[in-house]
Length: 346
Image (cartoon, rainbow, N blue to C red):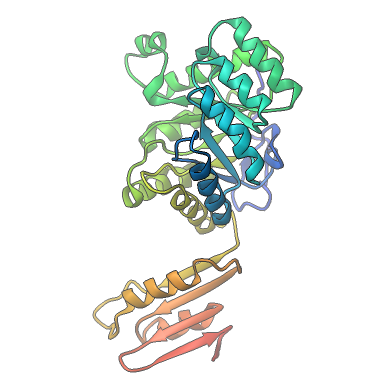
């Protein structure tokens, strides 16, 4: 099995945190692992069979900066729509498939840049061989996705409940199937809906394989609660170099997932680019409606692609200093305000 010492690390394309050394794979034109920058991805929430709605959602994801998009392929009609969707968008597309190997074959033939399947769940060895052969011929990587909610029954009986060790054993079983067929264009995810089990599972698996990891907290929740939980889990994984691609899973539009993912990466200094807003939390010294001002500014600058910092401050204690240090700063008072540009009063 693809093993690698945890001591062999790279800087992850400029990441401030040491990155676990992994094999490199490509999903379309996006490089994953092997020192490449951490990649942001999301998943469509439309019915894949609805061509118009799905294409529109993927285009919104592209504008939000999503680098890889995953689509559910539940049946043959969705696989057929996948072909047309692929022609109409730029982002690499991953086909998400369960149980039916024919859908995986159809997705590869339709131009999928990656597959999300668990080879142990798609049928006989012959069927798995067909999928592996098709993927190998087109250099289409396969993501093994272990979810705490769908572990194999024999593994659950062995461990009595869903544990990090059980998740790792499931992942290694699927990996072994692919490796026995000579296939190593693999990435792996180990997702639970809680931070502790997710992080511990990745830590355990990192000692056993050198395949790149796709990371996230599955079914994290609504926009607010899910963002907090995802930030907690992904910050731990990213700071330990255990994530090569990330998805923030929210009960919210997928563009919000992308925005939160980038905010997490930017906060950790792992990815840069776009506008970062620094705003005063307000206190009893604030003499203006800073919350509305901050919301208004964020709304106005949300579409800007510039790499810049905007500060919105509400009192005389820290306000002028913080505003002066930003690219653009607004220091607000009761009846007046100062706008700074690069430290100078504008």
